[in-house]
Image 1 (tube, protein in one colour):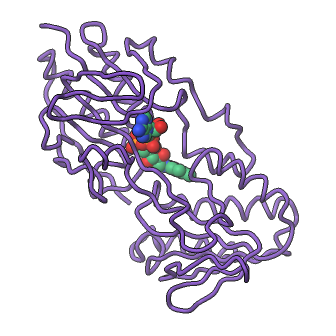
Image 2 (image 1 turned 30 degrees about the vertical axis):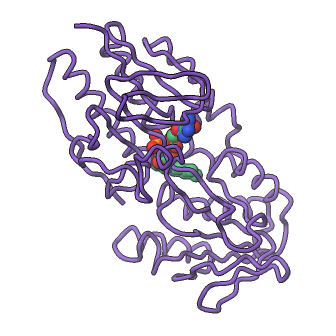
Length: 326
Ligand SMILES: Cc1cc2nc3c(=O)[nH]c(=O)nc-3n(C[C@H](O)[C@H](O)[C@H](O)COP(=O)(O)OP(=O)(O)OC[C@H]3O[C@@H](n4cnc5c(N)ncnc54)[C@H](O)[C@@H]3O)c2cc1C
């Protein structure tokens, strides 16, 4: 069989797993190409530990070029267009034809979309932002800390709760907890949608740590002149330090290329196939009723990589995605 081009977009959780899998299984006989604008893979779950002071950036990042040991070509470039009619991907510096395409371009964060004085809000949902928050937290010894979520969906539904607990734990360790009040808000009726055992667990653990929960709190604006976060129903949370998980959207190149709507790229939930031939979407930017989580992206990557390898080699049996959600 002629060598095929299997192009993987995004070297995050889903893309790195798919590239590893395909490089190992068929990379000697076919061209497996991974593209990412960043030279490194960041392990995002550890942004929270980094903010807590338990990890440094070098501990949670790996050079994506290391994947070349697994029969994968890595291209460090920004993808600017995906042309499903002509089966090619355009980057800032190249045009790459594909026979199979796996998109795992993830979510982008948009902190500027928070209404009002959005620049006052910290978060830990990106590497640089997490480092800035760590500094701000180190200098915070007394006052009002407000933590919350702008609006779902965002990466890792339990993440903001875990963030609040880790922050609180750090304040206790530094001996300043008694000088600080902590309020947690969500636009949802309760944690993680507001019902079920995981929601109850989050509630209990906020309470155990003396963190006040505010539900159905939809941001009207960050009011910098009064140092207060205001909700659309007239409530107000004064703050000295503010932390808001920012709004998320699928990677903009997916919108610009006509692959995604607000909910992401539509896929068949069993196979992650899109309506375009040999084009698959996995991870946060795939429209699947599952948590936006690395564990989900990982499993989807394995399914798609396995099925492409099966199609090209005839080995094994096709497999299907089994939904994980929280
Ligand atoms: C604070 C935090 C805590 C988390 N905790 C957990 C957890 O405990 N458990 C869990 O399962 N998940 C967790 N997650 C979620 C998990 O990290 C994501 O769900 C997962 O990374 C999604 O994988 P993905 O491949 O879809 O996207 P990503 O891993 O985000 O990768 C997308 C990649 O695409 C690249 N890209 C995007 N656009 C372009 C472009 N135009 N050109 C080139 N490259 C581009 C990006 O640079 C990026 O490398 C957490 C996330 C955060 C932020």
